[in-house]
Length: 112
Image 1 (cartoon, rainbow, N blue to C red):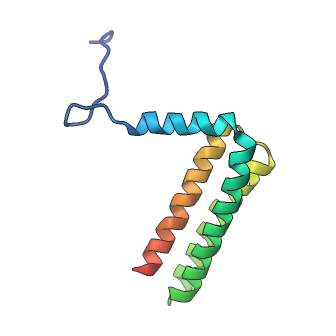
Image 2 (cartoon, rainbow, N blue to C red; image 1 turned 45 degrees about the horizontal axis):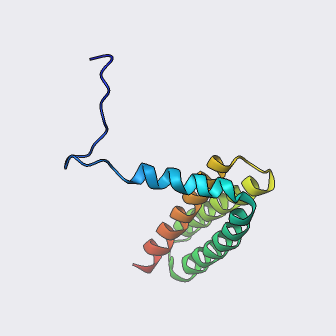
Image 3 (spheres, helix red, strand yellow; image 1 turned 90 degrees about the vertical axis):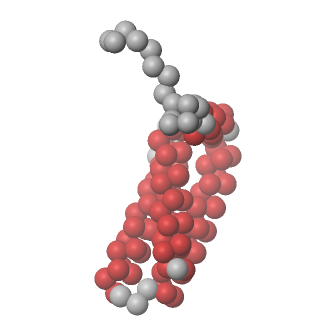
């Protein structure tokens, strides 16, 4: 069994398309890094601003509000720093995904 090559599949027997999509997106991001980073920086900063605005409007508990603001700031600033220090494409793309995910989750939590 050590030398067997197993194809990763989910329970239905089909290969997952998510890793292939991720690899395609990273490859595309790498090819036109400067353009995508510029557009992503603008979009991600606007999304972070919306997340902050929604948090300040809807959160009644001061401690929770401060934690949410801290998370938004850390994740948004981490992508800004990744762009400024000219980080490689894959880590920068991963930080962008994390930043967008955190902002969208905080927006969704505050709107429910």
